Length: 250
Image 1: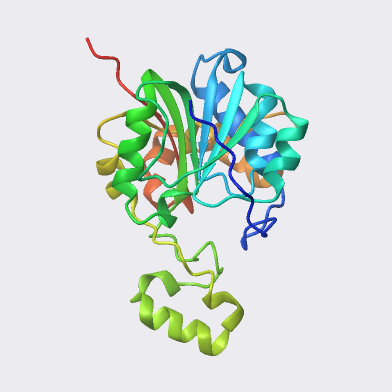
Image 2: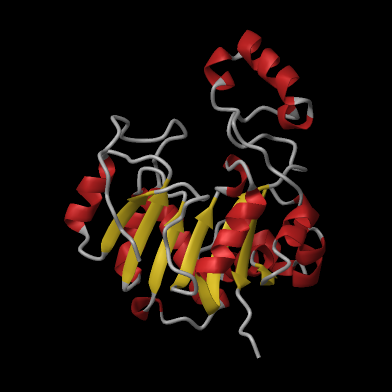
């Protein structure tokens, strides 16, 4: 793996913030441990679109190695690599991702597809770098959910983008600059992921958390909801979590 760390940009954190990165990393690990039989401690992981690196940093203790990849460098990268000997960062675009074919055990692609120029190219690169049988945690927002998750306005992502930006510039100018996501539907994502074996993780995660000891009341209500119904209604979820596996050639 090419893990070159270039000169760092002045920004410390992305505009969407860097809070609760430990929780997000724990959720990713929970999902992989629940839905796969992988021994993460023996595997190499690439976190695509890692931003300032907080999730990569908190993932590192669970893996043999973690490499965070982002198209721009961040100040915190040096801080994080100083504290984790098995953690590295690479400044690279998706289009020029310098990672060997069939070389990665696990890819994390968390809330990235909606921000890249070509989601299909992103997915093709994930397929290229994963080993046969390798797994990707793939998560992102749902176009059909009425609240846009970055600016937290209803329906703003359902109208033409130039209209949406005009509305935000007039009524919420601080949010206009962060409406930079282009989400899609459950069905479109499944089509894009057709080269993989795909498992919709949300129903399993919901049931797992609902059954956990001490689960909050808002989670316990899902104990009585059939898993099949959760799968049927998955297209209405605020966001998607898929565990996708690169098939082994036979």
